[in-house]
Length: 296
Ligand SMILES: NC(=O)c1ccc[n+]([C@@H]2O[C@H](COP(=O)([O-])OP(=O)(O)OC[C@H]3O[C@@H](n4cnc5c(N)ncnc54)[C@H](OP(=O)(O)O)[C@@H]3O)[C@@H](O)[C@H]2O)c1
Image 1 (cartoon, rainbow, N blue to C red):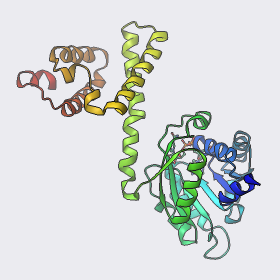
Image 2 (image 1 turned 180 degrees about the vertical axis):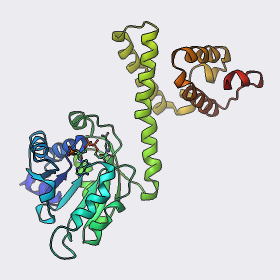
Image 3 (image 1 turned 120 degrees about the vertical axis):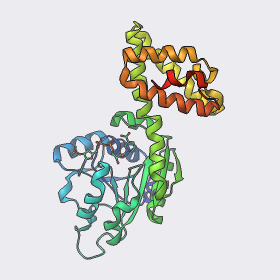
Image 4 (image 1 turned 45 degrees about the vertical axis):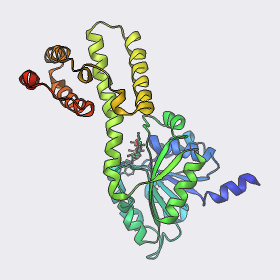
């Protein structure tokens, strides 16, 4: 009985469209949280079948055969560039100009507003976006880390209601984002995830060149970055800054620059740009006597 009530509050059956990493992870988590998954639709039936296996619920369907009557809520987890053409294509399906009335359509992109789904709104659907501020390198990892995470939501009232319900079922935190702020919001995620991965990868290469064995380097980097993020959360950016820039240790910085010129010259502009940003954060400047050495 309690389960039926929970299911009812979920607002009807879901169609997961484009079940890649995020789609499969969300599908499985929502299904486990009592949200009924009716359909899993993909461009290839084999992919839809595989995703149904992973999610543990739903009927596999070819995307081109999907219509508004197949579900109440449509979760679009395809690639960002596909949302606008897909919305236009879906809007042509069903009978009558209001074929999508009473339906909710949500996408999971962090940078695009829900307005990319406008063709579906014109056919009666409530549209929205629900974006996890989380990194999902595989569906299996997503199942682990999408629970309890933070979700930016925006869109029409019914879509927001649905998004809030899902996030609460996944023990997460939903917060509103304005459509016009989504690019900045997404840029912030770009700075702390793929950027950190790229920097860590470069750090790993330098450690290998410095003959530190990888069995040491990997856990050492992990521990170091874990502590750095903890410091930042506990003390804020400025107080967490350590290293030669904040100490004003220009001799060490010049040795870094010399080593980089030899080992990874392509990283010199990155080092210089980050150093300038660090100095701004620390409220320090490069002394005049050192300026030339730092720019060449
Ligand atoms: N991965 C993350 O860390 C992450 C985090 C937050 C939000 N997101 C967002 O979540 C969404 C999905 O990302 P993802 O990482 O899960 O991507 P993904 O693993 O590449 O999965 C995308 C799925 O969409 C399908 N697809 C691609 N283009 C399509 C099209 N034109 N028509 C129909 N289906 C299409 C692909 O199907 P085929 O197999 O047929 O190519 C694939 O199954 C994106 O909006 C992304 O910005 C991702």
